[in-house]
Image (cartoon, rainbow, N blue to C red):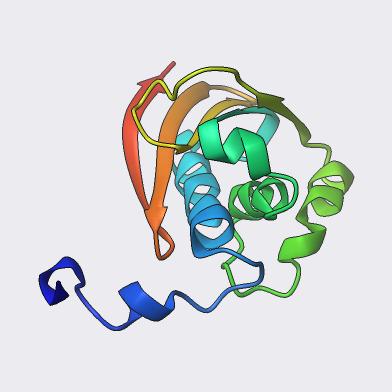
Length: 142
């Protein structure tokens, strides 16, 4: 059983704002990576949720967590719960879509982010696998 864990933090989870390491800390990480890949401040973002993320994103803080990551916040930043308002003030349009059916990347905690910046756009498909750890399973650069 212990070979499944790399450290004690895989069991107790990361330091974060929010109720769930998978739905908040992991979601922050997905947003941060998507922003890093885009390489600029997004103008418009559409977040497609699948399975567990689609069912629980509002109650578990996934919405504000994804946006906090897009704003390059750390999961423990006290501004995380206010990130949607901060993004709106910065002129970033963000839409959330609850997709029916199975995840296109085979994981229940899936978010697919379509980001549009001033000069480029990208699509990142990521999943939160627990303890604030994510996997990027698809990436499209345009």
